[in-house]
Length: 318
Length: 249
Image 1 (cartoon, chains in turn yellow, orange):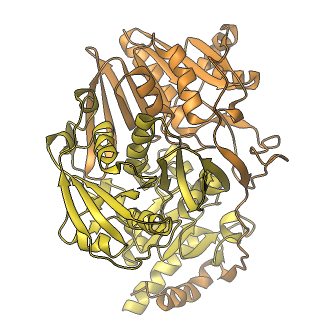
Image 2 (cartoon, rainbow over the protein chains, first blue to last red):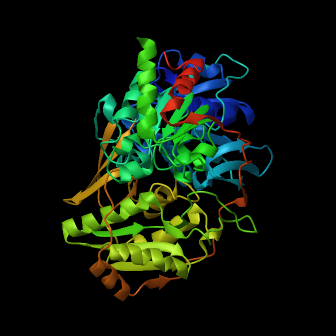
Image 3 (cartoon, rainbow over the protein chains, first blue to last red):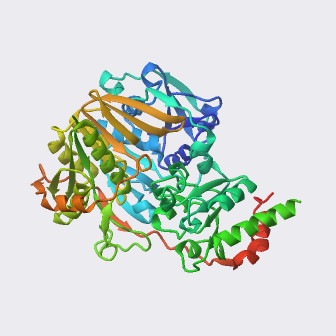
């Protein structure tokens, strides 16, 4: 059995969870899924479309609030004698998978992009921010792996009718010590979700010049109904908040259009934006990696080019 | 008074092109140099703050060869007062091996801080495995960490907002970049760091290894960039393109 740990939000299985399911379904059958906590309406049917035969839903006080150990105990309970356990390459997916691997004393492969068949299981995973791939063997069972976000196309497979099995996992007291005790909601302006789910992202980097240099890029993002993202240097210098950072130590985005302005395109940044469908780079240096890797480019100072684009959009809209 | 251990890793400072070693087992960093992973720079900052705030001490640890003393000295110059080198070739050690070796020297410390994941191998698991080896609770991906009254409080950016954790000491916390601004070393800090004797220990046993078969570079994406123009005159072409892509209206 292959078991996929699935994260959910109000709309159902999250995007990276669906990508992980897509990879898991290709690894063999039968495919089961485990959901801990909220089970949104329609998610059992949704998971069936990916070939999931059984959805294990963990409920009870022990898993009501997130805790890495308690949630991993629930996944371990559902795993039974699974040969492979797959989790999404999100912060929570990584955390639960690492707890599971530590509890079972088996290796774990993070950020997998492809998995072969055979024994030992051989996987390919991203290292060095995705700029290098590693072939790795997972000789123990279950093989525990997480699937890198936006590296596998979300693709439902041969649909089946999934059945729901609700269970209350046995969780030891020691596994309840480190768990979320309270959550402070932050408004939309203070979170990275807007960035990771945006269809259009406008990026700004060192070329912004100062904390005051983002007005035009913010306006362009607003005009396009998108989000603003920045490079690491921008947050390191304190020009913009960290939750806006795109990159290896920030958010991974996969918008239809990414418009990086004044961003050179170091590996740290590329790690977070490589999955963008179309990249339009605006940079004064035509040799910058961001320009050479882009689909389209404008060579010029972002402080001149971006206001001109904004003006043109407003002019056409009358 | 909290005794803090902060674990760091010497990693290649890759920014542009990456080259691999001839045996395809590592990144060739001869021409780019080395640094400390970004998350761990924040962990060092938090360790020093906790030590200072509680009147305790911060010890920095790494598993590596003699070359990694460079990174230990950096942490010493930032306010750590002791340094431990587990002397081994890190390329042969998998995350479970590293966790086991850290556990062997971590028991005396109240709090162990690590980075969430290393910039090179990106395993996302050493801190959690360490917590199991020590039988301690672990908070993962913390942006802020404070110690008071025998407990660690930490904040994590979660899917529904900022999540608060409170766990009793001793505990393990892995740190994500973004919650604190790492300080820069001072001249006196550097001078002090030079005088500290780095304590060297040998691994408990040989490693099981990382399971690595080989590294490879992703296939180069053949790319021909279409330059739409230069300067503000390109604005019209840009908006034409955005309209064509269906995002300008």
